[in-house]
Length: 444
Image 1 (cartoon, rainbow, N blue to C red):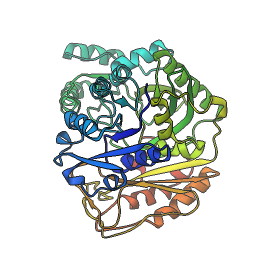
Image 2 (tube, one colour; image 1 turned 45 degrees about the vertical axis):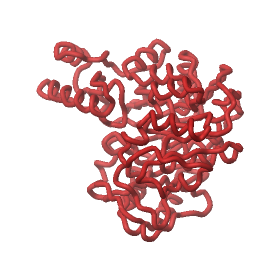
Image 3 (cartoon, rainbow, N blue to C red; image 1 turned 60 degrees about the vertical axis):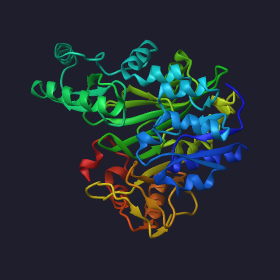
């Protein structure tokens, strides 16, 4: 932990803009990095300094560690914020930042590595008393695969040990599907994460996806900031997030939060992070994984707690104690976020191109985190998310109504977006009543 004054943001898009804003309010200078394709991006325009780090492909720019380290040295940056995605959970990148005298704004490298290996993370969480679904260790042979499947029983799900975001995941319902799914999962895992290891666990057919936001400093203070419901997903990618979850009452929230806090204390966690759980139809929650970074959906937690999580990240990295204790956190109202993507709302195919006309919603209780503007060209090289629309209201019902109103104000001409999908979601009876699970989209 050390003091710093200039932060290089090793990312792009709305999260880069978000970090720049947090830094500016704390009096910190910022350095944007960008690929050739992002030369006109908003984060490049907003930062105090900008450096081109390579061609459009992310492997040659945002994932190119030597270029990022060189940009930090050239600019005089003394800290690096990784945002989410790209290198945010890369142990080697965090370690190299430290080796080069740069403060990495996130957990220590060894903790990133510990929780980045899902098999190891499951073992550590289990030893800390966190409930797990029945599962296996890493499966390196067909014999081990068949033995584990016989113990866990169908249906089961194969997961990449080193990954997330749905890549390397395969649902298996029978012996005939087992080996082909394992082979394909290993291939996908190797391609996406450079590690073919997969493991399996019991598959819950229609779970809710509940996650707990935590924050921890270097002085031993650990708190939770409540839960987020992230059940509405497509191919394991979240589309809608909200806080609090309609499924949890105050007692369950406190218990799950306390479980997350104790788990973080057990591993000596520092900075912000998220523990993700599956909730079955009986209301039991089982640990899935931990994300050692700021998440896309941190916004809904900020809206119901009034706490700036990105600024808290920066303060923790400076060596400061948390600016609040558990008893200081008060949950106010309800917040919902939708991820607006540049894509066809029916086929989900990416839809890059120039934005010819743009109107973003506003008004009381509406927040939009974005890096787009009129005339901006959405590049085809990166994730298709172009904005996060977040609403806040005293109750969930009023938040849903506010979200419907805000969606009706969105105008993005020149490209297609998934706004029509969200309009269908908010009008669905199950959504309005809070009857959510990961199979929700199949009922639209």
